[in-house]
Amino acid sequence: MKKQRKNKINRARNLAMFLVFGGMLVMYGGLLLKKFEIIMVILMLLGFVMVLASTALYFLIGLTSTKAAVVTCPNCGKETKVLGRVDLCMHCDEPLTMDPELAGKEFDEKYNKHNKRAPR
Ligand SMILES: [Zn+2]
Image 1 (cartoon, rainbow, N blue to C red):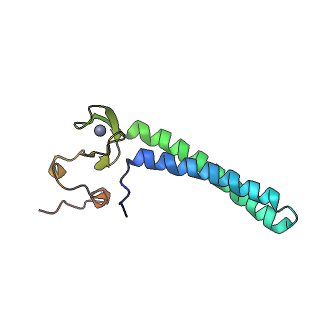
Image 2 (spheres, protein in one colour):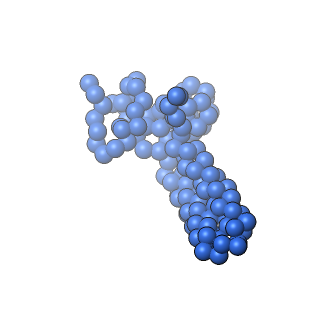
């Protein structure tokens, strides 16, 4: 299976989208099952929480986007946002780094974890 490599902001956006549609679907399921009152209430609450979570996520994306570094991707020449030490280009998924020490190294999510040094 192909490893999913996506720009963090894009990934968060996808998750937020999934939560909105998932939440609506769950609430719709609750409506269909209104004969079973308890199930309906649970599904409605769950759907509501999912939609709320997506709203919070969209808000967070908005906040982190302002903190992300805007760089021009050397691969496709478009502007992209880099979050953390390493991230992927939003347009072409080219690995980008803010840390000169990591430049040229294989992209690895773990470089984002606290103070992990690149293998030498
Ligand atoms: Zn690019």
